[in-house]
Length: 218
Image 1 (cartoon, rainbow, N blue to C red):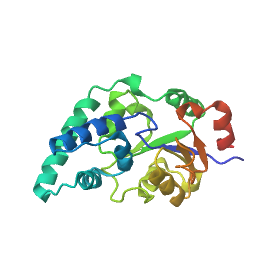
Image 2: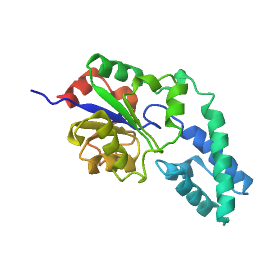
Image 3: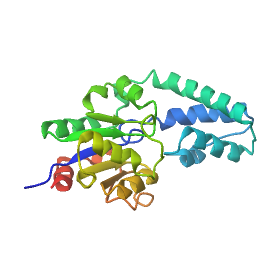
C-alpha cells in the first residue's frame, strides 16, 4: 500500500511572487539613506528575516544606525510593502499553482503553507487561496529561521503527518536545506545549480505536470 503524502509550500516564489514588492520597499529605504540597492543585491535577502535583511542592506550602503533608528526603518519598510500587498489579486498566483492545488484536492492530498512571512495569511487572502490550505505556519509560529527545519516540522505536525511523508516546495536554498534537515522530500523551483541540494528541481511552477506529480507521489 502506498503511503499517504502531504505537501508543504513556501509562499514567496512558489505560490506568488512578492519578492518584487520587498525589493521596491527596500530600494526606496536605501535611497532615503543615500545609496542605491540593485535587484542583484536583493537576491541576498531571499528567505531572510526582515531584521537580518536590514542588516545586509545597511552593510551594502556602509550605513550605521542606532537600534531605535533600525526599528523605525523596519516599520517604515513594512508599511510600504503592505501597501503593495493590499493591492494583490488572484492574477498574481504563479502559473501552474492553481492546477497543482486542484490536483491535490481531487486526490485528497493535504497541503500546508510553511513561510517565514508574518504577512502570509494576508497575502493568501488577497489572492483568494487562504481557505484552501488545511494548515498555515507563518512567521508568528516559528522562532528559528530556515535552514532550521522548525517551520516544516510544525507544518507536518499541523497536518498530522510524519515528516518523511511530506514533500516541500521551495525556491530558496535555505528552504531546501530546511526540508532536507526535516527528512522531507524537497522540490526546488528555479536555478538547478543554486538548488542542487534539492531532490528534484523544476525551472518554474509550470513543471508540476500530472506525470511529475504521479512520479513523486508513487
